[in-house]
Length: 125
Image (cartoon, rainbow, N blue to C red):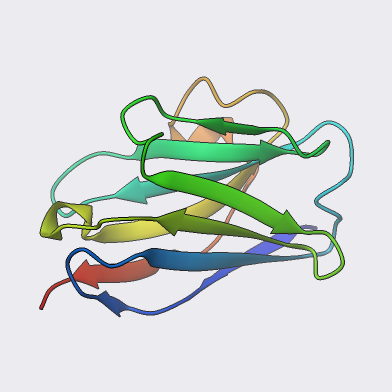
């Protein structure tokens, strides 16, 4: 069974870049035809899909975050990475990586077959 684990700094200063890595075990991120997403949940709010990288390497982003978001992958390490630039306190959230077997048109948990435990990231000076 595939397992995902987020890692990265828990505290980021405003205007800096947030960087998180999702390490995948039990399956390859290049296996057809999966999508590997980043999803976040700000305190007191719902889940927000940020973007994804497909098994073939194509990337997709939420229009509301596209200008600040970059997702890349390292197939040799079976990892994919999120970078979010120019962060503000509104970017404070629990950040999740997740896998889906179809293009991520929904953000509810049931749509994704595997989730990481989540990484709390706080944006504060």
